Length: 56
Image 1 (cartoon, rainbow, N blue to C red):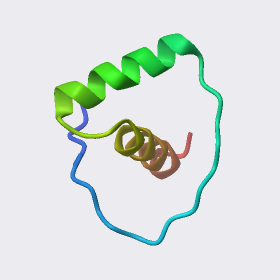
Image 2: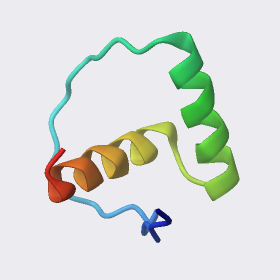
Image 3: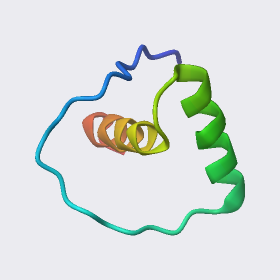
């Protein structure tokens, strides 16, 4: 299933939260961020938003 995700950054009010991720996930997210010319944080936020919208 292919989804078109808007990787542009939107400036919104935000908070700070620390999470621990496996090193292999960090590496994959970094690769995707580089491919999409965006930040690690933006990729993680988009993934969370997508999952919440889809009801995961």
